[in-house]
Image (cartoon, rainbow, N blue to C red; front, top):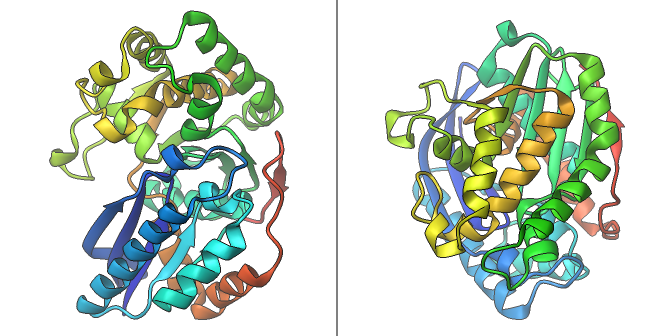
Length: 335
């Protein structure tokens, strides 16, 4: 069975075309279109018309590409930047009407659940009780579980792009006080979630997302050309040193560091502060950088439960948009 998924993130639209072999999504083609929505959408502001036009073009191109690779219409979702926008419904309707792709948004807790599912399947049962950290452009997802799905999950408005806008807007090289203010915000909003993770005492911790992948490379993890099966780990101590290293450089110099791409250089410092603070508060000393995340979780869920569950997710696009994320939002799942 061939399938495809489209992920509209804060920086890119990503397509994965995969075959389901033995219950595992095996990628046959991937593609991406750079949008940089996080640079164009301020927290709490609508998605600008020109950004919607670029989004429509990217989703249409992804749909055509999936068709050329023999996949039916993609499972398409947008993450926090679109989800929190006041004109979310207008954006979703525009994309659907002009591309025939039923783009939807996922609640933050569902993002955490699906990302955990992808990470659990990649890490396997020998990982034991598992903690997950995922830094996106608009939100931070945290989850813990002993089984296939998380027992505990939280979605917090602590994305790297979002906090870069709030704390480092129009600032090429933030002052130490600005960095400390950002860290205080993260500590305040993550305190209760971190206490729960410490109480659970995970055996293994994983970090997903492009932000963590780039930070892992900066901290010495093997480069992507070595393939997905090479173990990549990152310690809290190394990430703390990376925070100091990034804070000492203007944006253009950060982009010259190992792993830090030019499009993400501006938000790399906020991402490092978020990640390091989360690891310190949760007591996690080392994380494994996991290549499977939300896209793989969507594909796995589709393989396991069939199309009915996604049809229900897509149907919810007609419901009113939720308010902007509150500082703390926690939900329990089933394992």
